[in-house]
Image 1 (cartoon, protein in one colour):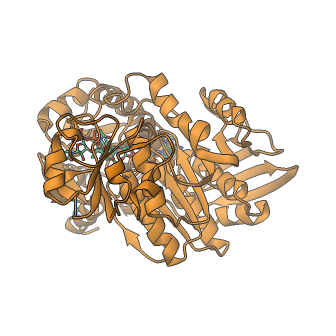
Image 2 (cartoon, helix red, strand yellow):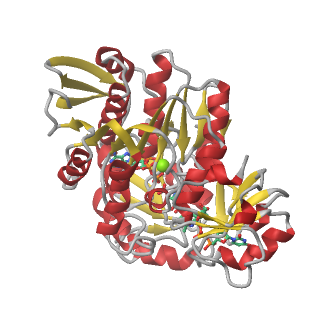
Image 3 (cartoon, protein in one colour):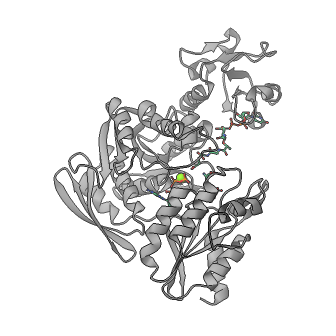
Length: 485
Ligand SMILES: CC(=O)N[C@H]1[C@@H](OP(=O)(O)OP(=O)(O)OC[C@H]2O[C@@H](n3ccc(=O)[nH]c3=O)[C@H](O)[C@@H]2O)O[C@H](CO)[C@@H](O)[C@@H]1O[C@H](C)C(=O)N[C@@H](C)C(=O)N[C@H](CCC(=O)O)C(=O)O
Ligand SMILES: Nc1ncnc2c1ncn2[C@@H]1O[C@H](COP(=O)(O)OP(=O)(O)OP(=O)(O)O)[C@@H](O)[C@H]1O
Ligand SMILES: N[C@H](CCC[C@H](N)C(=O)O)C(=O)O
Ligand SMILES: [Mg+2]
């Protein structure tokens, strides 16, 4: 593709770059292939400009950056005011196909679940559908394990192009605050945006909560296409501000939840637990719908309603969409019932931040007639401030707490555990996660419930810079087998 066709009018293109054909895009010098255009981006740890020589040595034919790199005037270059955004827009032009209908969801918790639910609703309504996010790419054609919640723009646009070529017409994907802040999803043609909730997260990255919320609001301010829909949970302190941002863009607002109006919105009029399911009464456009949602956890109602709103906001008929809610399956490792011992249910959950842990424990309280047991830790090289908060939440909302390791990464696991234990009064400490799970399961008695939180779908444990195979699902299964359960 011609280099010139990758950029808009705000780019200054070196005359020598004007005729260049670009074979690919690269943002990491170590991934450059001959013929690539290398984007030199200033990052959080280093500056891509330092790797321009390496990129050229690897075959880069031109460099794009937001400033003329010193000493590199001999290389064909493109200067563009916001190089990260320009990268995403260039990736959208380079990988030009996208599914015709795309919804994106943001919020502190529930994104993976909403993306999975939206995909399931569309699929059930007969559309070839996919989701992209923390658990990777899931489509009716293929599954690819993921690592980032919002992939970098090159990977994201390559995947959009591939799934569109596969025949996928409907995509729901997760917009993380990092992804929004770093312009990873600019260039995606988004027909509807969803917002679940806001609580403490990523305070190692965002200077304050306002910055974090503003990153999320970019979805409505900058990214959902004009005339598109905004599906917003109405039940939180931040809901009014999010709705105002979407309204300022003239988007079609579909508020959902107890505080939504049952006209354009989806109002939750009633909810009651029924075994491992919940009975809901919904109001929408003057009609009442009685639904049996086959999921555990009050928060899954919020996720299901945002997903329903996204499907309705992109053109599906409300009656059909509500019918699909009766068939939803939870995303892997999200309050997933994985076994039982002595009649006590055992769940795997992905709560790795304070509000999610509180919500997960509160959701499981009705299933623990005796003791609610939680096993969890906290990731290393991530917001250290959340550790004591999570310790206190566990002590308050569970009856028995085992503090173990999550992904310690480069940190000392004992130090992470100590920060949690400082507030988790009465908790046991068992660093080895498999041993912690064995101990938790061995102690279960009739009437108890156990949740292993923090790693959900993950299949590895990152210790130092090594990822060892580890899955909570497998660890639970092995512990149950050892107990003869
Ligand atoms: C902190 C963060 O978000 N970093 C992201 C950012 O990297 P960066 O630009 O800051 O990287 P850097 O290390 O400072 O390097 C600067 C530049 O030099 C380049 N470089 C570097 C070394 C080299 O040898 N050659 C080279 O060219 C790098 O490719 C980069 O372009 O841009 C990269 C490209 O898009 C991302 O891959 C990278 O995500 C890292 C891997 C990461 O771990 N991010 C996590 C925190 C994250 O994004 N999480 C969110 C939210 C999770 C959730 O709550 O669900 C997610 O969306 O997953
Ligand atoms: N709507 C919600 N409100 C509060 N907590 C929730 C909600 N949905 C999910 N959770 C909790 O958060 C955990 C993660 O859920 P999910 O993966 O759907 O969210 P996410 O926003 O994608 O998270 P991440 O940013 O970590 O990828 C769940 O396992 C559960 O403990
Ligand atoms: N996307 C999140 C996932 C955290 C999962 C948890 N298991 C941990 O390692 O902290 C992050 O990278 O911060
Ligand atoms: Mg996610």
